[in-house]
Image (tube, rainbow, N blue to C red):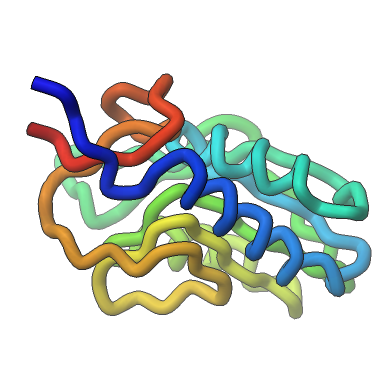
Amino acid sequence: MKQVPLYSATQIHKQVVRLAHALKPIYNLHVWILMDGGFMFGADLIRKMDLEPESIHFLSVKRNYPNPRAPLLVGSYPIFPIHRTHVLVDVISETGQTLEFVKEFASTTRHLKTCVLLKRGQYQPDFVGFEVKSQKFLEGYGMRWKRHLPYIAEAP
């Protein structure tokens, strides 16, 4: 059975270009890509920016078992320069819990924005590509399942 994309590679490309253009006026931008899902979106977003970000970093946030509501920052702890603008990049925001966790961790900085390709749920990131109505599990474009796909589809 052939999978029908929810968002095609062309639709994704158009949103990436739009979001990169929206981030363009921000100078001295530090980009923080949330791994693992955000790697493809983050790379595409950075490639479409006219100006090179001042820095690019990767953060990994994992679930903390037995308390999954308390995420853990994995790897080296980042330093968020106070007088710079930072943007947290992730492929999808559902509850906003991960983005809020990192924002709280980076509370010493004055300018912290969030950018996601997909928004589902009540949390409102600063920059959004698509608002997802479907409640089905999504795959493709760097997300947990079928990361290699250039499009996003509902899992069968």
